[in-house]
Image 1 (cartoon, rainbow over the protein chains, first blue to last red):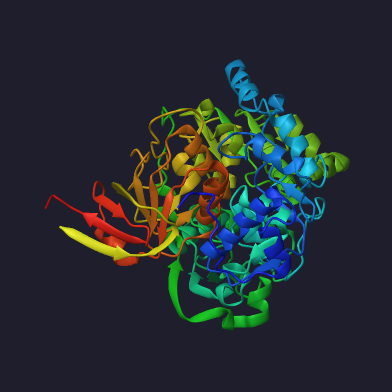
Image 2: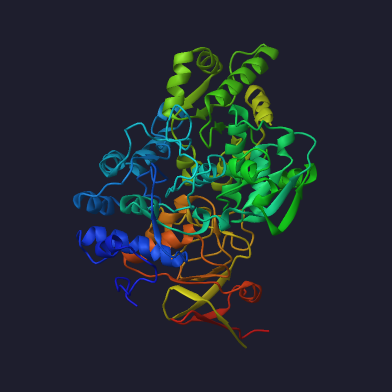
Length: 435
Length: 151
């Protein structure tokens, strides 16, 4: 069958949707609707439903293979299309070079790689980007303001944002891929399938956390993701350590755990006993009767951590750089890094860290940090650089292949050669300069 | 030896090709991120977390997986691979296709104008049977035949 052939859709459409599919609004809206309908058919949806809130999309970088082509975006703009609701985007690429300790060759390569970025961002503004600073992978932080309500129907992408919106905020979105996210938000429609439906939101795994202390969220999430892949887990045992009120530490913990779940597997929704909204509302009824159980203890997490290969050219090298904030971190997390680094430096009677370090957060979070003052002064005095960019978009290519980079991010470790260490160990390495 | 399986044709087509197999989730972005930056006849799997496929050439192959995992940035990868000439020939899923894979492959089909044939719901037995190097024949009806000449 030729790609453009259009058989009768195997999905129930409204008269309005059928009209668009028949070309009533022109050929480009027709093509957008055809794409969304095909998507629904593939997912086994009975029908499409209306999107009810702002979008968040993953396509922030004008790199072919990650973003839609400029020609495709121009085609959409020329047809007068834009998303039904405004959207936020993932972080900007790391074009604030001074904050990344780059060499001349790296700058030259980045200039070439992102030569179309300005034009790309302009097209996205025309297509519905909320504003010129709406770039972060923590859009739901209060200062950023794209915080879905419980029950909102969305077509989000960025696996870290999808899993948080579903799990912690109780919104409903599938894990939409780049480009399809934009097309669904332009159509204002998304297939009624999978995580948009009640049945698919019940947990089919019980993750029984039996550690004596609160486990590292990045390791716990990776262990869960590897085991359950795309299934929905209910995590028990964390209520011993986290508050039920979704205060800042709980919010940040679940964000990091969810990001790791989504990276190591394809988890779009998790529940945490006594904490996340659907687990609180439904109790143990959120768990399907025929669920499987996976016990996670210290041994499981230690085995996982030691299974990560060291991909540095020289495994014994001193760390050259450190990247923190993948996903973007909150004001409270930044303040933890500022306090911890300051204390470690004071203990060694040392003024500056020994590993060039960049810490990433939303533009709006960095603005609040600047207004407050003290944490920012401590970090800058220690030599830490701050950026609203994305480290993944710097190093998921040849620019740092084999370099001795350290991180506290499961996601960055997965997509680059960076080596993973827990937060407290990273503080020691930054101050001591070696592993 | 011929082994026959029946799935659901998501993006139907008739073709033959050579299998590569991942028994764990296939991370689209991690697998292809080195393959999307320049023209190449190859698409060497760069996902160090995938012991089945890491280092294998995925270009023009029939990739057999349970489902896909990882970053939603993977959605745009297919379109780029098609433009670069190093896309796989087909994707065969033992489970129902997931939203990340479905979205990306359908966008590539309708907006890049070249089809990567997709069949899903082939069942666990398919993935337990197929091995690297098997000759695969896919029919438009979702039929998949594994042709194995060695023992």
